[in-house]
Length: 202
Length: 202
DNA sequence: TTGTCCATGTAAAAAGTTACATGATTCG
DNA sequence: CGAATCATGTAACTTTTTACATGGACAA
Image 1 (cartoon, helix red, strand yellow):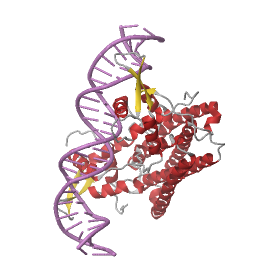
Image 2 (tube, chains in turn yellow, purple, orange, blue):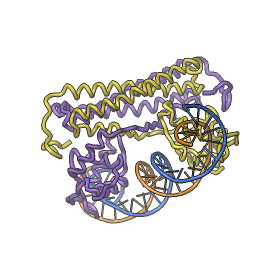
Image 3 (cartoon, chains in turn purple, brown, red, green):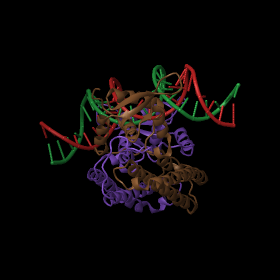
Image 4 (tube, chains in turn blue, red, orange, brown):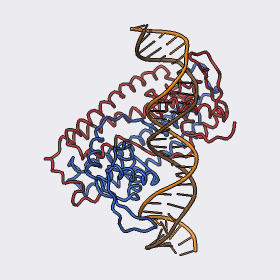
C-alpha cells in the first residue's frame, strides 16, 4: 500500500486490466499478440510486477480454479489504480525511438547489392504477414460498430492504435518497394575504396 | 581479442565508425542527433562498450590531442570489425516494437474528451517540430547527389533511413489529425459505467 | 507417450538509465 | 566569473531477457 513508483510496464498492465480482469498468464498472452505490438514483456517480468502493483494497492487478486501446483490468480484494477492510470495517460511523454531495422539499413552499403536486396525482400515479407493479421483484427471491429465511435469506450482507443499499426505497416511496405527500386535502378556499381573513403566527412 | 558476443549497441557503434573514425564523445553526440532517431545510448554505456569492442579486436584506439584529465581516444573499425558488422547487417532480424505513445492512446477512453484532445495536440506538436528538423536534414543530401544514388555509398543508406523517418512523421501527423477529428465529431458522450462495463468481453 | 497449452514463480545475466566525478577551454 | 562544450570514466540502480523449475490437462 506504499507509494511505489510505477514504471511503463506497470501502466501497460493496468491499461490491460482496465478493460477486464485477467490472470498473469493472460496478460503475458496479450502482450505477445499482434494487437499488442506496442509493448512486450515476458511472464518473468509480469508476475513480479503484479505483486508490486498489488502491494501498492493498485490491483487486487482473487484466487480462482486452475491447474498446476500454484494458485491461479485473477487481477482487477482498484479505483486507486484506475486513477493512477488516468493521470499517467496524458502526463508528459518523450519517446526514445529504437529501430534495429533502420540500424541494419544504415549498414546496407557494406553489402553487395544482391545481398542487400535479399535482406529487404525477406523483411518486407514479415510486414506483409503482419498486414494480413491486422486486416483480420480490423474486421473484428465491425462487430462493435457503435463503441468504436464512442471516445469513452475502450474500443475507440483500441481501434485508434490498430489504425496506427495498419498505417505504419502499409507505409513501411511502400518504403521497402521504393528502396528496392532504387537498389535495382542504380548506375554501374563503383568499386569500394576501403574503410574511409577519401573525401567523405559526413 | 577473444570471441565476445556483440550486442545491438556494439553494432550501432561499429556502424557509425564504419563511415569515419570517431571519439566516444562524438558517438554519443551522433546518437542524440535527430538523424540517429533509430538507436540511442548514453556516454556511460558507450565508453565501456568501446573498451569491450577494442578488447575483441573490432576497433582500435589512437590517443589524440584533447582537453581534460584523461586521454582523448579516436576509434577506428578494424577489418575484422567491418566483417563482423557486414555479417550482422543481413542476419535474421525480428524486432520488438515498443511505443509508449500507443500505450497512452489505448488509455485515452479513460479521459474526458477535452483532456484526450489536449494530449493529442501536444504530441502532434512534437512531431511537427521533428518534421522541420528532418526537412533540414534532407536538404543536406542535395550536396552529395551522386553518392545518394550509389548503393555502395553510406549516403545511399543514410538517405534511405531519413526517408523512412520523414514518411513515418508525416503519417503520424496525419493519424493525429484523423483521431482528433474522430474525437470531435462523435455523438453525445455516454456516461461511464464503472470499471468493467457490462457486456464488454474484448 | 510425447508434446503443447495452461499457470505461476525464481535466478541470473544483459542492457539501459541516472547520478557522481574530474578538468580544460571558450564564449558571453 | 559563470555557464556551456569538450572529453572520459565509474557506481548504483532499473529494466529486460534468458534460463531453470513445477505440475496438471488434453490431444496426436
